[in-house]
Structures are given as C-alpha cells and as structure tokens.
Image (cartoon, rainbow, N blue to C red; front, side, top):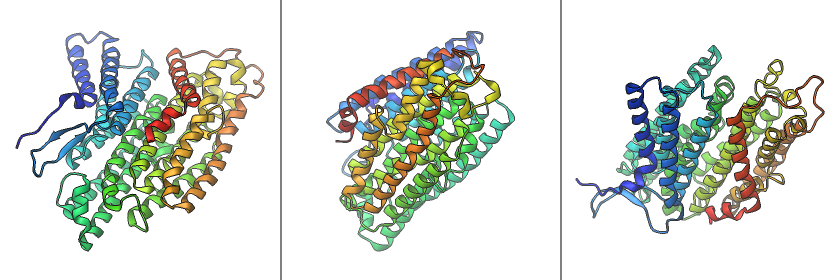
Length: 483
C-alpha cells in the first residue's frame, strides 16, 4: 500500500518535534548553554504556527496520508478548522514558554512542552483512530510531568490526580475506539463508514454507544461535569504556567479531538439531531458543566481555584454548539474555545505577574484590591480578561462568542438547553464581576505603589489583551471563522 503524502500539511506537528530533537542534541553537545533550549523551542513553535497559517484561508480540501482509490481513506485533514486549532495550540504553548522564568526553564521543560504541542497539533487533524488516540495521549502525558516537575509535594498530588484521571480516560477511549471499529468495520472516523453502519439497527446502536464512550473519555480532557474532579486540584497545586497550559492549549487539543469524533454525524443526521443518544449525552454534559462550574466558582475566594471552576463552566459553553451535530456547531465550538483560551491565558499571565507581590495574602482576591491603581498594566489586562469571560463590554468578543455558541443549538431546536445557557451566563457575570470589582477597590494600607513585575508575564498579558481588543472592535473576525 502506498500513501499520498503532502509534507507541508504535516509541518505544524512535525516542526515542534524537529525542535525537540535539536534541543536534545544541543544539550548533549553543549549542556551549559542556558538559552539554547528556550530559543530553539520558541523557534519550533513559531515555525509550526507559520506552517498552520495557509490552512486558515484554504478553499480547497487539504488532505494527506491518503490511501489509493477506490476504497481510499485520507488520514490527515488540514482544513481551516483544524488549522485554527493548531495555530491556537502552538501560540498558546509559546505564551506558556514565555511565562516560565528563564532561571527555571530547562531542557526537560522545553522538551515536554514541545512534545505536548506536537500531539495537540496532530490530534486535531488526525482521522484514523490509531493516530488520533496516540496523539491525544501525547498531548496529555507530558503535561502531567510538567505539573510535578521541580515543584512542592502538593504539585505531586495534583500530578497524581491528573495521571489517575488520564488512565481512566485512556481506558474509555480505547474501549470507544474498539466499539467504533466493531460497529463500522473502519479504523477511520469518516462519515461514509458511519453512514453504512447506520443502515443496520444493531450497528447503529453500537456506533451510538461507541460515540458516547468516546465522549466520556474526552469529557475528562475538557473538564466537563461529572468528569471534572481533577481540575481544581491540579490547577491549584501545579505551577501557574502549567495551569495556563491546561486551560488553553490542552483544551484546544481536546476540542479538536471531539470535533473529529462528531464530524461523521453531519453526513448521517443532516443537521437534524432529534432525540438521539449522542445528543442526549452532550446535553447532560452541557447543563451539568455550566451550572456546577458557575455555582462553584461563585463560592471561591482563591483566584486560581476560581479560574479552575471557570474552566469547568466554560467547558459547557464549548460543548453547547456541538449538540447540533452540524458543521456550524463544530466551527462555533472551535471559535469559542479559541476566545476562551486567549482570555484564560491573559488571566493566568496577570495572576503570574501578581503572585508573590504580597506573599501573606497568597492568591486570594484580597491580594488584588486596588490593583488597577497600583499597576494599571497588569490590572487592566486582568480586568479585560474577566470582562471577556463574563461577556460584558468592552470585552465584546466574549458576548459575541456566547451568541455564536448559542446559535447552532437554537437552530437545531434545542431551546431548553439554550435557556439553561442563558441562565448560566447571567450567573457567570457575578463570578467575574466580583473579582473585577476588587480591582477597583481602595488599596490596603501598606500595599506597594507598584508591585514587582515579572516582565514576561506582563508581556504575555498585554499581547493577549491586544488580541482581545482587536477582536472586540472587529468581531467579524470571529464570525468569519464560523460562517
């Protein structure tokens, strides 16, 4: 069997791997070169991001790793949707690399980051179950090591929690892929194989069960309720840059993997989901994640734990448009995930800049009282991120993203889910406005006029905030992604 390979489509995943090999080679030859690893890692990430850009404007199918006709299958799809998620994951990982202190970043950290992002860039484009499953775990396992690397005992506990969760998730994913192959007789996630199985009642039931099991496995990665228990523990115990990675690049990888699983249903159901087991499973995940995540976030005073529960709630919004099982729904989910990833990165970067300014206050909301007066740059970027997550002006792009996420569900007739989403959005405003109000408060007596900055963290926050401002002024950039 021969494969038709277009190497340019594989570059977003291959260039980080090439950078990883170079980092290891340079470390073997000149181990004392401190800046070689982060510089080579940054170049690999930038190269992968540049390689993903042509896919954003592609009008023709971009397929590779194709087997010969007449029964040929293409195992890699470089569509605009996949390229968008690849670009988002690569740039988010580059931002995380910038958040790590130069004194602490080393070969191990850079190699783990590059390995994780190569898996993230590959899983969103993979269409065969073998590559899809392996690259999904490649996007996850290095992050587990990053959580515990060079950190305190609490981080080891968080890493162990994430490892245990990942093992359960992997077991469900393996079971789901086995059921899919049994139902369709095809090791690829394509609409044609599902359509053939849909004609037989027993195979249709088995295919639905396979998809539900795969959804359960991916719900762990997305932090969707009831598969979310690892999220508050891991995000609060590990290093802040790794928490930012889990809330951004890792979520984009999970969204891409989920989009690949649900894509075949468009050709079978034709955009009319109806009372189907896959839709029912998605609805349960959406409602539970939105309500539980929002209510629990309202109870938090520790800022990273608040962001962790916010991640749970935002997972419901990412899943909401997918309930329509349409192309527009998948595009809307990707667009919302990108907006959420940027806003989360800005928030974590601002927290990274603030953390340590007043050690006795830890990471509680009280440490941020009057931050806008003490440091308008860090406080302003954090305020914008919170407004985007809440969907309030001037963070208009957050509101646009929520409307875009609601539209596919409403078009599919899923009005009860849309009503729950609106209620959750209203409750969510209180989550972020509570923190936002603290930023405007009077600084406590003895608070430093301008706390010590971490330049890289502030730079990441400013760049991310600039992206949010541009898309808020020109929301058609987001709408164009889902049209």
